[in-house]
Length: 256
Image 1 (tube, rainbow, N blue to C red):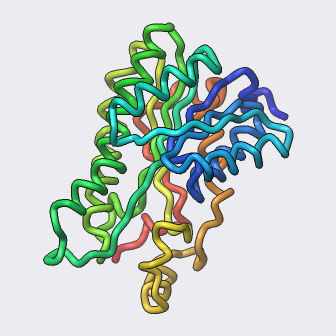
Image 2: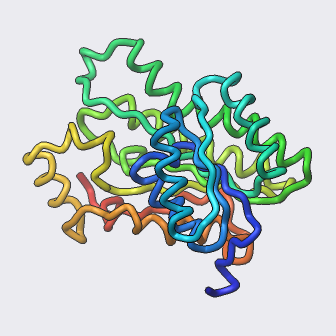
C-alpha cells in the first residue's frame, strides 16, 4: 500500500455508512487501514456493514444515531469516544429522497428530507468537530453531495435543494475549520443506482440520464472510493479544503 494513502491508525465516523454508497466508501477506507464507526438509524444494517468489513480483515463497529436529533448524536458521541478515544475523519453520507412533484409537496416532507440531508450534517459537525478541536486532532470531513446540487433535475426538488445546501455548508466550514487543521470537502456523485433513487429511475429517465452522461453508464459504488481515500489522507490532500469533487462520468460537463 502506498504511504500516500495509508490511513492506518485513523478512526472514521461514517454517518450513513449503512447506505449503498456510504458502505462502499467505508469499505475503501477500511482497505487503506482506517477503523470505522458505522453509524445509522438502522442498527441492523450498520452491523451488517461492520461485520462485512471485519470479515475482510478490517476494524469496524456499528452504532445507532439519528442525524436529525442532537440528543441522539450526543449519545452516540459518548459511545464512540469510549470505544475509540477520538476520531480523525468524518464521512457525512446520510440521504433521503422523494419524487413528489413540486405542487404536491407538503412541508412535512420538505422538513423530513432537509432534516436528514442538510440539518443532520450541520448537527454532526457541531458535535463531532467540536470534539476534534477540543482534542487538538487535525483531520478531514467528507460530505456526500449530488449532481442534482448543481444541475436542476426534475422530480427531486427537495433533495436537490438540500444537496445545494451541502455544497455551501462544505465551503463555509472549510473556511471555519481551516485554522484548526481540519479540512472540509465534498464528493459530488453522478448517477449511482441506490436504494433511495431506484423508485425514480423509470426507463424514460434512465434514457435521459444516459443521453447526458458522456461515459454512457451508471457509476458503481466502489468508484467513489478513490475520491474518498484521497480526501481522507493527510499526506495526499493536506492542502485541499473547500473542494467539490465530481465523480459523475462527465454529467457535470453537459448542458441539460
